[in-house]
Length: 294
Image (cartoon, rainbow, N blue to C red; front, side):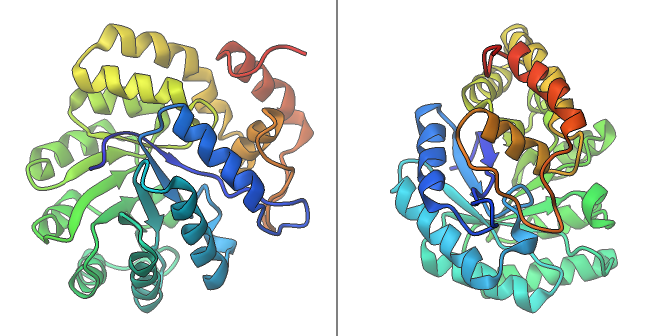
């Protein structure tokens, strides 16, 4: 069901921080028309940390309605509280999500056994396809491949998004887990490398602003066509860096606004991108042929 370029989509907001459902519809249609393979809603890029439960549910419900079964919808439903993650995952299932993406519990720094028990409990209690999400740079906890392997035999756990960018980690996950679950990269900079190695796709930030290019790069890489994958990836390489000049999703929201796709809205404690980064990010958008020069 899930392969290729899966966009970790930004959540459009008005300047006062309220949700902008009109821009959300336009953004989703932009992705569908540009061959995005699936949408991941209310993840890190979707500012899940600052949406309340009702808003979280409303974004999922609205996204499902707009998509109307044209491509899959994966709902971010992770939390650092197991009971909260359970509630969000059950709610996502009830709303009609095709799968859920569950980030490792952040801040409280569970042990590997704690991670195993957390994910197993959710998988035992909610019958929906679930994708584990390991991003140690943001959560301060690293789910090791042996833990992933133990979880990979559960019928409701169907994949992992590995966002460490580490080559040895990618190799170990492929060796231990690829026969049981799908493996996705969450690091745009190394996504081509990992898909050429055998990953199933990329849950991507860059795809927010370059959806067709990311779809095509993933397609070529999955076919083993390194030459054509590299042509696209080389064009996007600077962009992969520049959209992280400040914490995600600050730069990607600036870029989407510059492209005319969303309004200038983001929620505290995140703030709009510092003007000192505008020129370099705009240059990378021009070089990637995402926008034209003024």
